[in-house]
Image (cartoon, rainbow, N blue to C red; front, side):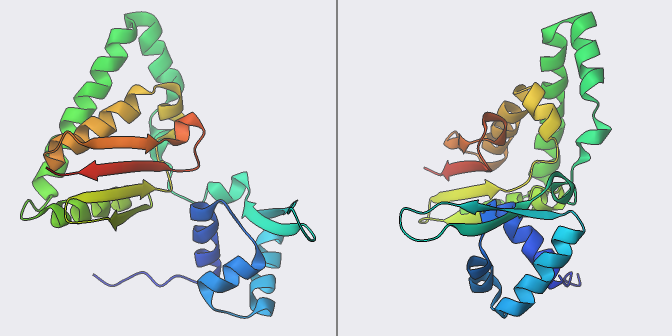
Length: 209
């Protein structure tokens, strides 16, 4: 598969999605390009309404200008929740009760568990984790994997394609965590941060026995 070539603007947008806000110097450290080049790209992105900035106060010295994604900029990242109508789910709940919503998400969890299990290499814990993250990225989660030792891992999801639904129906998050446990074959999967609870990203700790 041919890798996708990203422009500098794409990389800036992706960094701001991951890090939430960054100064010009921080962007330079990540991208290793000149101050003038970064400023030029940021000016264009601001003009396009994709990026904005604010000044962050420091204990000592002058405030630092930090750049962040606007609502328009955030919309550039995959969000397939539009295909799942929150209003429609609310109508189902109103007509059939809360149990009907739980059943819908449990059915979805069962389908995803089977789908992921068929795609995940079970040869080692590391391969399992790599495959899970690869699948999540294909679905638009902007996931990254960290390995702390042979049996301990961390997944960070910088984007949530079903955020609008998950914010309204938290069972979506619980089902995702449950699905990870089943596919990875360990009960030690903990969601330590969640975007629906006000965190910037979703973060999972995974441990194999």
